[in-house]
Amino acid sequence: MYRNVMASNCVLSLLLVSAAVVNAEVKERHSSYSCCEIPTFQINKHAETTWSTNDTTFAVSSGASTACRPPCVKLEDGRMTVDECVNITVTVVSTTEKDVATEERIHYYGQPCSKSP
Image 1 (cartoon, helix red, strand yellow):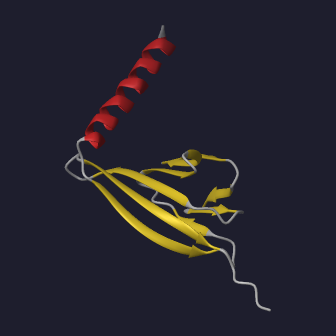
Image 2 (cartoon, helix red, strand yellow; image 1 turned 180 degrees about the vertical axis):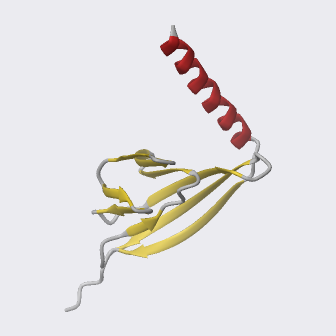
Image 3 (cartoon, one colour; image 1 turned 45 degrees about the vertical axis):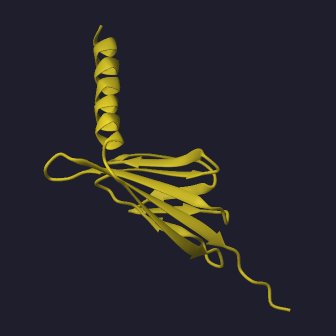
């Protein structure tokens, strides 16, 4: 019985957050990053953050809980590192001091290193 109640509460919480974000304005930004060095991205530890490429989520950070699979190689110490030069969409969902959910989407475009002749 306890597990069913916990599962229901988790789903309900997720639905409430999703509903709040649906009505919020989504801020979008576009940026490029160099693939000449190991690509590393900052993590907002106070928000739920997901990283995806080609509409497939490969990393999630939500407070102390994290999940990382290729192209993610490391998700710790406030940073996420990838081992491929891919286009990445980062979605950050957070709550303001007034309990208003906000969503920001950042589109990162990997720039391969130019080969010198």
